Image (cartoon, rainbow, N blue to C red; front, side):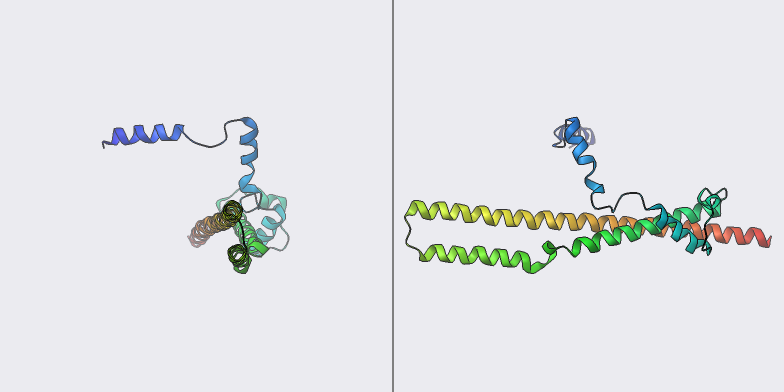
Amino acid sequence: MTSYAIRARNRANALKSTGPRTAAGKAIVAGNARRHGATSRPDPSAVDTWLGIILDKPDISPAELLPGDERGFRALVLAEAEARLVRCQQALIDFEGEPLTVDGYFQERLNTAEEFRQYLKSMGMTSMERKFAQFALRHVEQNIAAEISAHQGHHRLLSRYLGEARSLRRRAFAAWHASMIENEERQVA
């Protein structure tokens, strides 16, 4: 395929998107990434605390929250990155602490479904009753599989947000460190 044909195919596929089309649907999914707090703006008090640590000043003045120089700006960006990283770590820890994350929970449900399957085999049922029971059991197992998949997907998403926060913090720290070195070189010269 030529690159033009590939681009045309990609555009045609993009038009088939299954995302929400109505205003109500878009409003619902607009809050999806904020429900766990991992991607929301960091708490201003947390940013103040981190800024105080970075600048080695226990009391932060309002002027330092609106920096006028490169060093202050880089320190504020680093403080926000630190606060966001802590928030992402906490969101992942909270998620992992939920009852659904316990591997035994899913295994117990699957074992119960298997026990029920064995119980059905031992009962004297008509073929129609057996088919109905097997259909119901398959439905339960599919629901369990869907729960596991959704749970793993949410965990992957939070892990991705944590990775992005770490990357942001690394870049902010490198920029802040470079501004500190530049500031020291200016003072020496």
